[in-house]
Length: 255
Image (cartoon, rainbow, N blue to C red; front, side, top):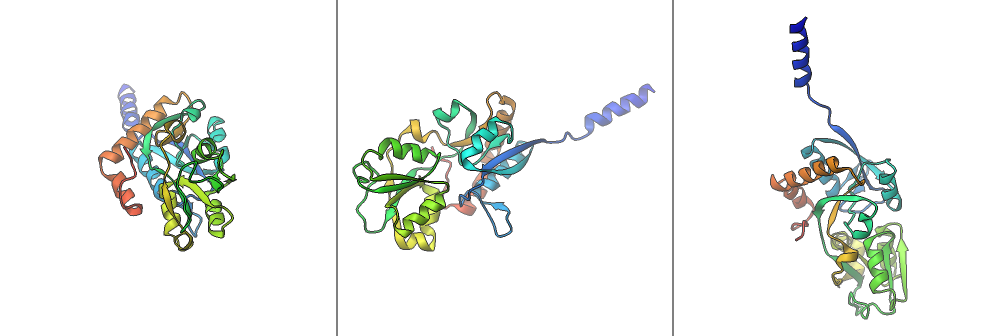
């Protein structure tokens, strides 16, 4: 009997431990080239691949879970999802409600407007212009802080694509967003025909934050450590660069 008990204990110790299941929230609104559904409805893009790589490295069983952007933090806090990987910038304001992993990318913020129109990414350069931004983003906060006083109007949209479409149609004069997202817009047929980059906005770390990280509930230190370890591992073994090279001409990790 004692021998059988020892064999049972040894078997249990040798058995693989099931990976922790983690519901990773992404924004339900398409945000190419980071995350968007393909023709079959499967979510694809740089960030989707990074989620898979980080979770594999961290030995987590991650389930990609689309959530409306304006409700994604409440969904995390209430336990409907366990993490956010949706190009969410680490800011002091958000850190009052949730915690973050180390960053996994950081790119500049830019303004795009119609070709041939004299415009600069400053309060003076955007005076009298209608500026479009996605709602509940650092870009909305930045425009309201730096440009709203001189702008004709700050117009908000549920998705960046809606703002882009209004710019193409001439209903607004400019848009502000992450440079990579707007690079993809400018590479499209409609974007290339109508618009051009007007420049990078002045840095404001308080609003623009410290790069993009994994959003986590307060107190989830063990899960935070696993995500940090996963990010470190794919950065060290070349997986991060391999995925990035499929989508971008250079690194987007930032300083």
